[in-house]
Length: 153
Image 1 (spheres, rainbow, N blue to C red):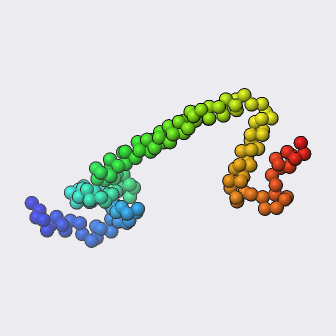
Image 2: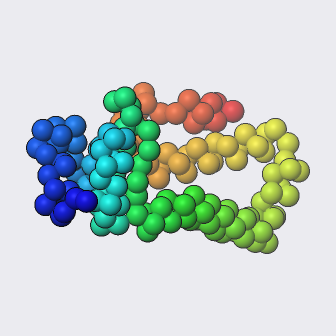
Image 3: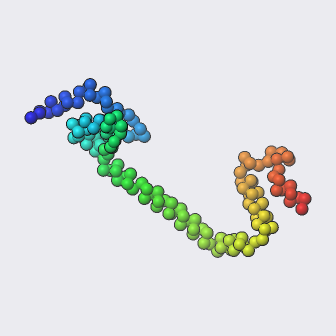
């Protein structure tokens, strides 16, 4: 039967050379071989409970991870939270599209002929161009081609 002192000596400094610890996004990570994990499972479990991500390797290749239940639940809920956010954004966009003004605009777009659609596209391009000063023309030669065509017509 091993006493507490003997159990502590199982993990000697020579064996620690296989263990790597580093900081990543504020979370501590530790890496152990499968044999070390088997022999020191209680300590590894305690590290995981304290928030350390414990990587277990076999033949120098990562094979498993030991994490706390809180970390596991957070990882499990992350996709659902993202889906909820996307659903909320879609619903907001759909609500905006259902306004009487938006309905009239869509009806007008479907009734429009090619000439009307072209005018609407030019107007939208101008609106975008004036909204973004970095795209604004710096001299007369930089004027949009569409504006030059309109003057000739």
